[in-house]
Amino acid sequence: MSELERYRFRMQLEVRSYELDWQGIVHNANYLLYFEVGRIAYLRQVGVEVDGATVREKARIVVVRNEIDYRSPARFGELLDVYTRISLIRDSSFVFEGILQESRTSRRVAENRSIHVWLDPRTGEAARVPDVFRRDVRAYEGENVAVEMPTYFACF
Image (tube, rainbow, N blue to C red; front, side, top):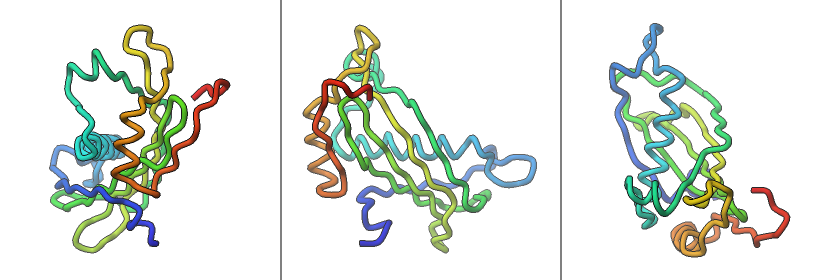
């Protein structure tokens, strides 16, 4: 299986003029936004409710690590394919992976790996990733996601 075949979710976005830096290429911070747009769209595709009330009252999820490998610059007007997947679910955390690719040429623009921790909305402490989330992601991803058994000693 090729790397992109592991990604069931893909969306597209067009680079806008205000996302460029003084060199005429996309400013490095905007790649974080592109990957976040992909993650939110992915969650909705999987069936996770993503709105203001849910985030405040039911599911507080925070990013604890974000890695980006920049491969080539994106430029104004380019159409980017944003590939997104969840590759791992642990006790209270899960891992998103993403790829940005220029749509017309398939030129790799960037890769992302981010770790997210599920928090109890009342206490702000790390909480077990809910079974319904695990089930929905597993149903969508199939064997492309690793779901680890919870341990009592796992920090996240």
